[in-house]
Image (cartoon, rainbow, N blue to C red; front, side):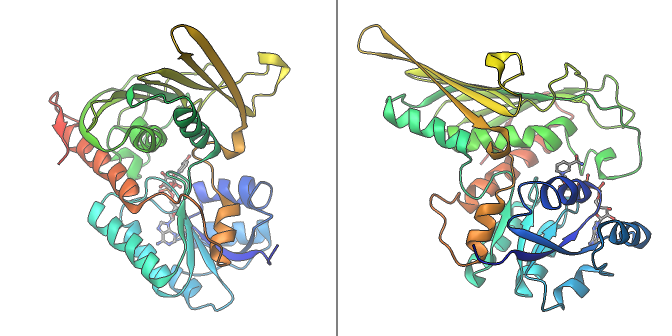
Length: 350
Ligand SMILES: NC(=O)c1ccc[n+]([C@@H]2O[C@H](COP(=O)([O-])OP(=O)(O)OC[C@H]3O[C@@H](n4cnc5c(N)ncnc54)[C@H](O)[C@@H]3O)[C@@H](O)[C@H]2O)c1
């Protein structure tokens, strides 16, 4: 393998988790070398610089001027991300960032196109640059068994948070609309956009049960797609059942159903690091077919594809890359949800 990519990481709240669980100890370390860090909070940056033994940059600009740095890991809040991404790719660096990509669809599309034109790699975890192994398996079954068009889908995730108001973007319904969907349900939106097509209409419902923040902690988003498929995405910060972030999915096609669930260790003696996909379909009149696939949790939807990042940065071609339109569609859904968050009416997506 070509040498690792020298990456400087910006934004040390969630970015800290990326450093510790993805880069220093985790799947990214094989492909990416942490070569520096940066945060607007200089004291925080200094203390993490000492902890990780890496260079501390005083600003994103100073990273962009360093010829040693090949790529930036951008883990700042979503609003205004396109502007930062633009400055990074314009300086000749590649980027790995996170969901939600932006909140402005035009700015998002412009920077995605510019990255393509400049030949710079711009990846994020959701939607991932190429369909993850679980989504690919669903496409494979769909084609192998002629499952037909998607009819309905249900996606859910949950965890139990006890957050307090801290004045951050997560307290602000304008920056973090319908919080459990914006922060966690986004993975479901991106799964369903890949599986079900172009979104046409949304409806939203939410409540606050335990949270200390002024934003919601329990919510549902419904999406109707152009082809008539209807779906719901449930997100909650209120459930503790020992198996958080399950990202469970049931999708019905005309001729079959696929479910995706995280296995608990009790199932078949496997660890909960596996995700189980099952297909139920029929052949001919009444021959029932069931298939099951087990996929490592590290490579299911929502994961960071460091291997593909490395391949693309080193000039390799990725097969089945997702389109910029899909990334932008997810922003259009989020914006329709934001517009409807305090109304009971549904919203059309033009
Ligand atoms: N918090 C999570 O559990 C989580 C999980 C997955 C993904 N994410 C995503 O990660 C992103 C960041 O989330 P967060 O929770 O860390 O947000 P946050 O607002 O809590 O932290 C962002 C950090 O980035 C720094 N920062 C902002 N702009 C900067 C700039 N221009 N230069 C240098 N530093 C800058 C801030 O000082 C802060 O430390 C969001 O898109 C979020 O959806 C968060």
